[in-house]
Image 1 (cartoon, rainbow, N blue to C red):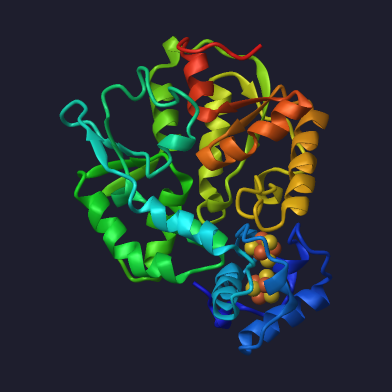
Image 2 (image 1 turned 90 degrees about the horizontal axis):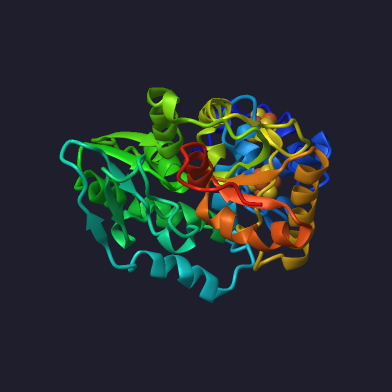
Length: 333
Ligand code: SF4
Ligand code: SF4
């Protein structure tokens, strides 16, 4: 949540933004305008990648300031039918497939349709209860429509619905984890269940089953979802998973804090910019020697299907990558 008392107008947040070319003076001036309740240029340029809040060294949460101003001035040029897509997510039919007694619940949110085939299966997941559908939709996607209100209005319902599933929840969708681990605190909601990210779950599984791993011996670029800006500490799980399964993560320009958005947030709004960002991202992975681009978010996976295929770079969803190391799937040729 935006905290004006933490902002010293240093300008670092928007100076580091990868989608504008601001110096610190311009960045600070835009933040000052927004703080004082005036519109600012950034509102018509922001692609909603959430990164500026991670860049801010004081924790003032400038993206929250920008997002609320975008909503107030309706400055994100998204089409009404695209906003309607988020509305439809909450009406996706629910399904709970019971697993073994005492095992946690894996929530897929409404992401099943965007997952690669058979991405959730095999020894890591077979015992788990799987929950999916609109009741478990977290609403965080609305930030990519330039809106905060739907998150705030539905956060309680989301937490209550997930709480009804059990005491221990694993979240597949990075958005859901960001909602539970970060955003709901902004709305003063307590989380009444234990939870973990699927990355932590897979890391734990691999630690407990080292004897089943065949090291893959490949280099992988990792596509960090925008929602990870809310919960950046999870990156250590990616590093440990890669280490455990014998995957090298080559240093490249657009990774970790400097990761580029997959463009799913703005591909319909700014298609030309999206094509340029996709090319920059995939070319960067290839230039630094990656054999494969690994995705965590099903939307990233879907959006990056075409640009990776066009450039001849393999793309693998992270559960599939781990299952390859467990001998359940084959690394793509
Ligand atoms: S929001 Fe943070 S990074 Fe941006 S100007 Fe304020 S203190 Fe600096
Ligand atoms: S959310 Fe992303 S695009 Fe928007 S101002 Fe912040 S860093 Fe720039």
